[in-house]
Length: 228
Image (cartoon, one colour):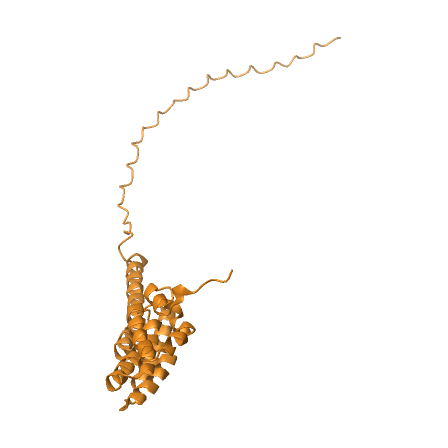
């Protein structure tokens, strides 16, 4: 006898719940953050010196000014030095030594030492015209022209008719570039001794002023005939 198979019923599916609506929560608008207050930048002025540091802006012009003053003093001191005014020259050299330019200061120190040595030279006591002349020749060779001129003038006062004194004084003036005085003294020397004209033509002491017309005339250089 056939038996009916039992059919198993599937359990009914549970109804699916409707999807719950997701609420959109509106985000609260946040207030924009306030910008940070601008702080004033403390900029250092280019001209203002930084504490604890040497300001090159202000120091440089001052250094240049001191260097220019130092050069000025050195130039003036050298003029006095060549004029044999050693005391005054040395006073300026001492100021130059304190200046910013070390090279210039070194040169000033060297010349200051020379000034000191020459200032300490003993006084020369000369009596006769020949004493003054011999001393003047030494000064001429050393190119201490002003001192030579002084002693030659003293010698001429003692012996106004000595032609060699006038000739030497003419040479001293010529070496100093004083053409007018050189011609006057040389004329006196030639008047006293005509042979001084020939001597002067070949004397190198007068070479620097030979283009001076009165001298050329005195030495008869303008009468020379050029060889054909």
